Image (cartoon, rainbow, N blue to C red):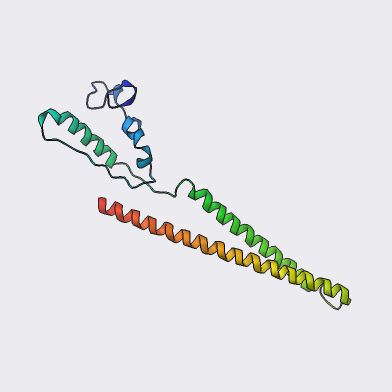
Length: 170
């Protein structure tokens, strides 16, 4: 039989209890990765005009009709969502570090005053170290921001291509 569990297809079923829904059919399970929303799916149905092939032709056309009604919504790949969240959380964490360094720098600038030369020298070293660390973090942030922008641009292009393909199919 064409479906799992020894059940009959809807076209052969006399009893409504024997109906195998589209989502539970063996063919749907075989095609699950293609019909699941993360792929552009093309279903090619072959038919034959001979009378002895009418039942198979009708069964294939019914399946194609049901498959055509399925709406696929393409999301990012399963690994894209977590990777993107990780990148954004890394950028957010680096922004917080930069803000913390800037506040430390301001605090040091306020403490810096007409103190002894020794204390001034120590503060100057702290100030320069914080400035250096701040520049490094800003460079890292700029690099990650460029990478994120590039990936968002690529994602937009892929969505545009997918929408273009689905418009052509209809």
